[in-house]
Image (tube, rainbow, N blue to C red):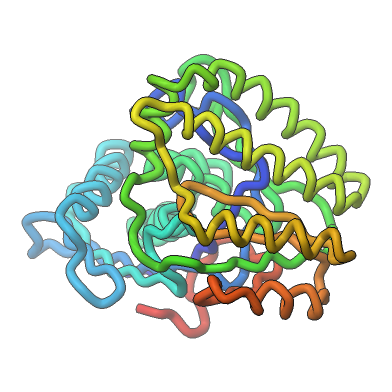
Length: 326
């Protein structure tokens, strides 16, 4: 039995589209920030008495579709490393599940580490990242703390696509503004696939994202928070533009989402250093300088905000958290 904790990561340059569905190989590289306050704890126990994998999520039996997704991922381990036992998986999140806050990233990163450790395997961070990617693409970045880059790899070579940590000391906070805690109607994978298949704007996305990625890495290296924030906003809006042009359109925003975008823009015009990003969901994440309490309080003040997580840079996935949720 092993327990692991992995933290959610929010992409500053988005992963949006796969060139290989089964292996979850992305069409473009991406770059993220791992957050300390958003995490998943997962306990994995292999048991000889089980006739199938079991999954308990946030204290209740998980829906069958979710259990099957975890079981298919565990099958990869069983096939690759030659053991046959089924597993009892117990997992819990410190934040809303399925609401566009990257819960699948932290979940599959935690599952990867716990499942391999429970099987007696000692994999390198790169190997863990490659494996986590096949559970949920962005999970490969949650193996690492701080800023992480996901390399898209070459052709259809599984081993060529993984994340790696970036060495940067840019001191930032990310305020996660929760407008709606419910499950989004269109999952990230389904929305992504529909966009790739039907959006006339998608053809320009890979080149746009690649250029944004290189520019943002340069801004991080220079410690230029304003440039990082501007590039992050541009990339998020470009991603959602491709989704809006899909048929039928993939719309993750709610009226409150637009209201919060305007709130961030107004705060910036008033002198607050803050920039937004939005993933496949309605909720807003805002990048700001570490310690900017006045800006944080101004963000909290908007009536559409139901809950706020103020996050610092989070650590890498690790075993045996001090106070596990499970």
